[in-house]
Length: 555
Image 1 (cartoon, helix red, strand yellow):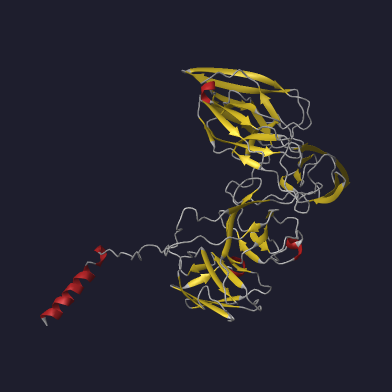
Image 2 (cartoon, one colour; image 1 turned 90 degrees about the vertical axis):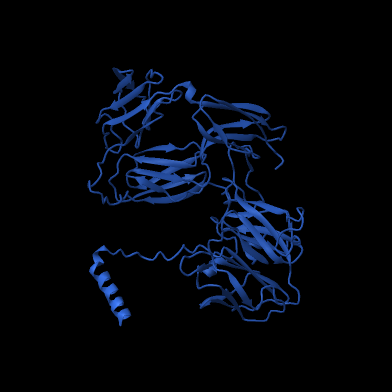
């Protein structure tokens, strides 16, 4: 009884002091970050004389399937895809198609199997079997890069064909198929020995056939040879450093049109329409059908994008015929529809936007850029306030304007002084866009730099005798800052560069038209080769960098 009374006393004490008690929520332990593991397969992986209609794959935990029709590759491909069913911790694959006799099949599960709670994917699982007495063991592997950006090409079907016939990717299913991974790599396992035609495809309509002009492709004219896998120990490690499999490198591209096709137009703002063409346009005729025809037009530097600035923006529909190098397209333009403004300030003011460029740059002029071409005026005032060592100065300069109907940028000429801080102001209502909008007050502030804030690069290009021009480019990010065309060895200087990383690349301009060109499978033309410099060049302030770039023009 004493024990019972003691327990009740403790309970009463806890209840009376409940306001001081702290309830701690269980943490549940560390987050599960491990993907599911395959425990067994029925029939066994690598089975021979396979005659089943189903495969059972058992995992160590409950799981879900992520789009198995897209994320499971079966090679050779089947005309009718199997079904995938989850039963507890087991995946059931049921075949609908009749399997070929004496054939090795390889199933690749890519991020398809995910654990139930956290969604951790089993990144890659191979299951192979043979309908005959022997399972093929040869392999091929490689990488696909985008031909223009040299970045990994992900999710391309990579296909092998037994016969060297160019029309096969246009008409027939491949003998083997796999898919490129996030890093662009691909691998064929359990294929028969022999030589194969290789072709890669961004298969938009899912039919394993190259039949759409906007499907990205990669190919190699020469046949590729399957090789035996490298010998490994019991842990799967290569027995020798020489037992690595030779890798194939493919470059993917969109086939280049033989004439400029008008792509889908863009309407980024009221009265602005951008018309991108598939290739540069040498001659363009325009025939308005109905709607406002009065506009200002501007071509980009590559002459593959035309921008229209309409002088009249209140219309229902505008139609125009474009005849680009004898190819005709008809386009119907709709007025711009602004997204509804849900902010607390209500609708944004409808003004002519102006922004400043090159603030503080001592080698490039301070520039005012407008969102729409402005109507010509004689000149306009700029108020400049400066400060250094407690001394303030004020100046007003009048900037004349050129008589240009497509004027969107104005250089502001003024003798700025090094290491001096400036504030620049331009009053409102000075500039009228052809769209009827007027500017707000424009302001910027900056400290003017000196030559010690910039660095220089000098590249000694070694081209040799190659019989065609070589284009060399300096890039910051994806922006080309300078381009030169070489016909032999040359030294190029890139001066007054702001600190940061820069890239150098060379383009083998085999057709000599001064630009990079994509390929054409039907004509057997590969995209022009782009060769990047071995590393980024890091520019530091008041520092010169000198490099040698030997360009392999035999590629």
